[in-house]
Length: 257
Image 1 (cartoon, rainbow, N blue to C red):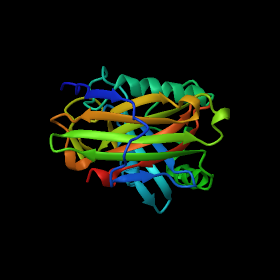
Image 2 (image 1 turned 180 degrees about the vertical axis):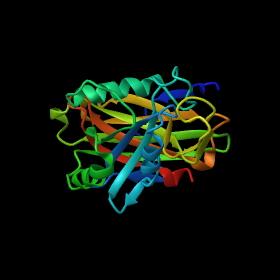
Image 3 (image 1 turned 135 degrees about the vertical axis):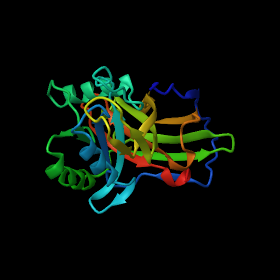
Image 4 (image 1 turned 90 degrees about the vertical axis):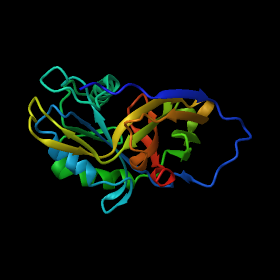
């Protein structure tokens, strides 16, 4: 099975006179938790974690406000099954987060909540979400996204960290995700198993530096033919690249569906 190629990406800075369309969202005064799951279809212990992540729809959940992301790593790809959703950048990001948390070992499944590692995800994940949600937001994000008739995803917005002068390494990240993905695995540890995934990151944009404390951005992603437009979503978050802590997150799933 071939790994999907990268989406085409056009980059243009927003002008100061940007007009906001009807569908845009703003982050609130409290922190929305970014939940990152590092996973692989080649990993037999990953399907339960994939199902756990699928329990968190983007937006409001009984455990709190959450933006979930499923990032498929590629270091399992030579061990029997090549994950069609894997990207090397996700393996690199996982290693960076592990280092930022003071550890050395990468593994799957592996959860992080707003940059903090959660090893006991069965017991501690909901508690960590509530802890993050109780914190005041350390950044504000405004995000607009829309799908054009030709299949182009237009993404625009702005991001500003609180106390910008104290966060010189803050950066913005944008993720295009897809739900309801299904794979029939024919080799490796999950041979013969049909796997389903939600919140799978299809396109990753960033880091976009928050120059002089804030930034305005505009990105255009041309959706691939194997993407289901009805299941796509866009999320954005601001992260302190020094500590790895996520300052705020937001999703605009309602803009594409």
